Length: 499
Image (cartoon, rainbow, N blue to C red; front, side, top):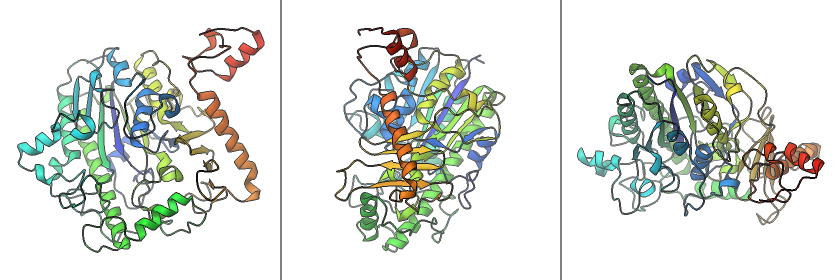
């Protein structure tokens, strides 16, 4: 067995942080993530850098904020991409694998994977590759036509992901979650003595909401809605109100059963909860395989997601518009490493997705990746409680969400909407379901001023400069990131450097 720890990085797509048994959800069943939490640290204030899949995943694997790596959309030409964690750990002796949903720019991580098994030819492979390994697996069993995790065979409107839900035609073992778990177990069993890094990327609970049995029947169509499902939206952002109105008035495609909005959202919630439990079950299979292989004690296990989703909060059927809610910007985040990370701890300090890469470098004894923006979480993993940062930020190209203490502000610049001013401010200690927008309340003007100041400070101090005049002294320059301390040193000494 290697002296270096293995890394099992498990990421799902669109998992609401409230929807965990260990987080106190009264309905959702997640026994395997609950037991993972018991062996490690669960972060209750983990903030995603982006409410969009691709930029968020790049932030995890590069350690850079979206405004530095420059990728804000789902697709686009990968120009000037930063180094990835795959590339970095591979150069330091690790065997690497990606299994499941990639959803990063084609050609970024693939050259640095010893094993690459994407689930979708459209997203994970060049267009000239007709079938993904998962498609070929289903075809070999004669059930490819029953695949229903990307779109339903019943859909007349193709290339659209329905938000309706039904039981899958596939057995769990043949579902995309079952297939990902099977391939992950195979990789673990065949890993040998070389340390490994595996990204196990489950493509759901993102729609399409089609859990297999027994996970569909684990929940019912009469589930209670979240407390804010029918909250007053008059002080919400215009695009959220518009999304709710469109869904409520039937513009969303209903495929199964009662076509009413009320019935549709209850089916959606049933399917969403079912997929969370199905993904949890798959994770349990992989954790059991890890233990059976004797590698559990020497493996860092991380569970997280790219961003959250509404899960019918404010009556919304998926995660858009994402930046508006803590349901999307806050994510589940669990780290475990037996004997090396404090077991059973709940940490309330703010951490961000960019923190994963530098933390893993510390834990495996590798040098830091170049140009990371994240911070090393190791002290928090080992029992410390000193804050890493004052605030956590989620960013769109224009709008930004800032979380600091109990407060969360969403900043929209003037001109983004016809009405003005538009903004959101919530005290999440008093109002965890964000039903009372305090943005327009004069009594909280000082809170808004403080959060705007934090946002401005964050934008200025985290912007990665390529040239600068004057340049801070090299000894105080952290991989091109210009700290306030190095800027002060430059001013105080009068030193001028040219790039």
